[in-house]
Length: 550
Image (cartoon, rainbow, N blue to C red; front, side):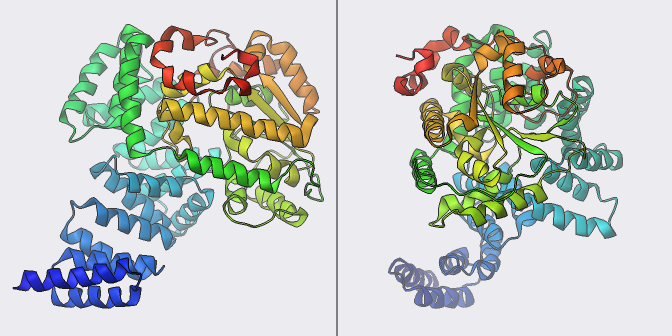
C-alpha cells in the first residue's frame, strides 16, 4: 500500500513537471520527501525541479541525499555535479566530478560538466583563489598545493605551477596523484629520465594506474614496450568497463612493437570509446562560425581598440598538430620574445559575444585588451613581444585584431591528412578537442578551420601571415626570416634551432620539438590511408587547393 501511494505521488509530481507546473511539481515532490525520506526518487525529483527553476543551491542537498541513498545511480551524480558547477563551487565541482568519473568513466553528462569547468580559465582562477586562501593557514598542505599547481598550469603560469608541484612533491613524495603531476612537470621541462623514474615508482606501488601506464607507454623504448604491454593488458582485463586511457596506452605500445599500421585498429577502438563518452557537436560549431561572421562581416567598419601597447602580441594559430608549437619555440628562441604557451584568455573573453546577441564595439575591444593583459602570465620587462599559440584562436581572429591593433597573426597551414593522422593517434583530454576522436569529426573540424581563415583573409588581408608547415621544415631559414620580418622583430639564427629552447612545452608536441627540425612526418598518412577513409572522404577539396585532395 505504501509503495502504491509513493508511486502515485511520484506520478503526479512528474506529470506536473512535464506540464511545466514547476511549483506544483515541487510541492508534491517535497511532500514525498517528508512521507518517504528513504525514497531517492523524491529527492531527485525535488532537485531536478529546483534546477529547472534555476535554484541550483537549493537543489544540492536533494541530489546529495539521492546520491547517498543510491550511490550507483549515475543520474544523481550527474545532477549534483552540474548543480555544484552552476552555483560556482568550482573546486568542489571539479573534485567531485573527477572522483565520480573514476566510477562512471564514460558518462557523457559528467564529461560535459568536466569540459565546462576545463574550458573556462575563470574556473581555474577560482580554484587558485580558493587554494591560496586555505594555504595561508595550511602552508604545507600538499593536496592544496597540487590543486593550485594544476590550476596555474591550466592558465599558463608555468613558474607558479613548477613551484607548487615541487613543494607538494617534497611534502608527499608517495602521494600518487602528486607524483604523477611532478612527473608530467619534469617531462614538460625536458627531463624525460627523471619523469620516467617517478612513473616507474608509481607503477611499482599501483601496477594498474591507468594514467601512469598511458604516460609511460609514450615514453619507453621499443625494447621495453613488451613488458609494459603485459601490465597494460592486465589492467584492461581487470577494469570494470572499457577505459580509453588504457586502450590508447595499448595502441601506442603496439605501434612501437609492430609499427603504426598494426596499431591502427587499436587506435580506432580507443578513439571510439573516448568519442562515445564525449561526442563532437558539429551543429554547435556551425552556429559559432555563423555568429562570428555576423560579428565581423566582410566590408563593415570593424571595431578597433584605442591603444597599441607593448609588448606586441603574436598569435600563432592553426589546427592543433599543424606546427604551432614549433613556431612558438622558434620565435621564443630569441631572447626578447616570450613564449606564453597556450593561453585560454581569448577564449574566455570572447565567449559571451559568441554565445548571445551582444555587439562588439571599440569600447568592448578596449576592455578585452585590458583584461587580457591584466590576466596573462608575468613576462620579462625587456620583452618586445609575447607569443600565444593557442591553435583554436583561429576562431577568434576578429576579436584579437580588434583588441590589439598591433597584433601579428601567424597562421600555420599543414596538410590536413597529416594533421588528422597526428590527432587520431594521440589522446586529447581537452574538451575543445573532442572532434579528435572521430575521423568524420576531424574532417569537419579541419574544414571549419579553413572556412574561418577564408573569412578572416577577406576581412583582414595582409594582417595575417600564412606559413605552410611543409615549406617551413624544408627551409627553416627562409621561412623563419619571413616570419620575423612580418612580426617586425630582428631575425636570430637561434630561431632555426628550437630544439635548444629550454622553455616548458605543455602540448602534444612535447617530444617532437626537443628534436631538430625535420621533414620526416610529411606524408605519413599515406602508409595507413586505408584506416583513415572516413576522414579522407570528409575533407572538402575546394577548401584545400594547396594539397590536391581530389
